[in-house]
Image: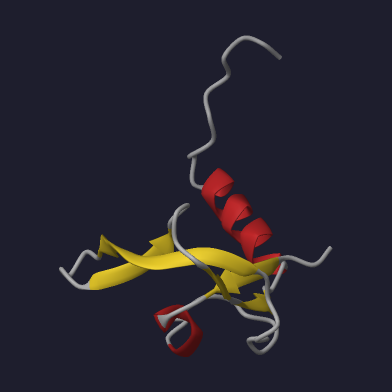
Length: 87
């Protein structure tokens, strides 16, 4: 199974730990992106905004083993959901 990530803005040049399995491709879909969010550090950031004009975004394949390893690691640390009696 292939999983892809859509990206725009600083994510393209600063992927910080995102497990990319390919380079960024510039032929992604067009999405309504606009500077409409204030980031954790107070900076103006882009986000999907329904009324914004559609702009092309990038995409890249992700390393699909990464989510599975994270889930297995969480389950091994006792963070599984408690049994709710339905199963």
